Image 1 (cartoon, helix red, strand yellow):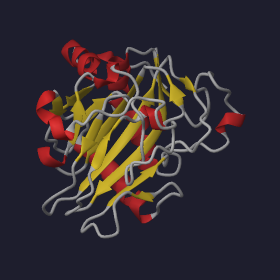
Image 2 (cartoon, one colour):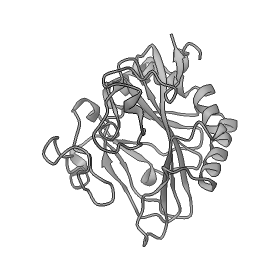
Image 3 (cartoon, helix red, strand yellow):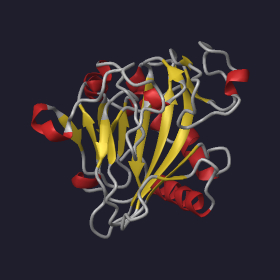
Length: 273
């Protein structure tokens, strides 16, 4: 654990993150670090965890798969979480004295995948409350604009929206009517400020866990292998849910009471001022 290097991003990037809820940092990861992540992703695909899911339909000509929480068994993921500059960027963007790893997330869309990732926020699916949080998303393959993540600028300041299942839009988490529905962004795109960036390996997108975002499928012959790290800051506390969160942390409620800071071996401190 080291003190964060807050010089890795300039003030304009911090201001943009706080205003829009999403920014891109070009060339943050070195070629060696990108190669490390790529090895980790391929190891993960060859040996999926029990949390591995297929997030596309059986008739999709491509495939969209995800896996979670593998940093303890895949050395490459642990190395990137602990030694890369990602945690330093997260500290600066969050304005937090501490940075903990919340979890890692692998997302792979094979060529020809039609399945989109629908508009959603991440935090309503999680078991945490608080505002000082940040996710990074980095590809190991070039990502064209039409296949990249898109973000609704400023939506992280507009409260939580009702989370639904991605495949069939069921309200399995918060009950129907308990939170506002998502706006119909796709049918009214010109009404919104939507941020998106074509990305090369080494580029990293950082976004708030309440920022609305989505992605289309992947056309053409390119894979879209991506890796995320989720970071949490000073004000984040445990918020046990009476349902299975995504990802789930089985038994955590017995070890970490509601409202407690995330002081647990599952969530190691990466940076501390």
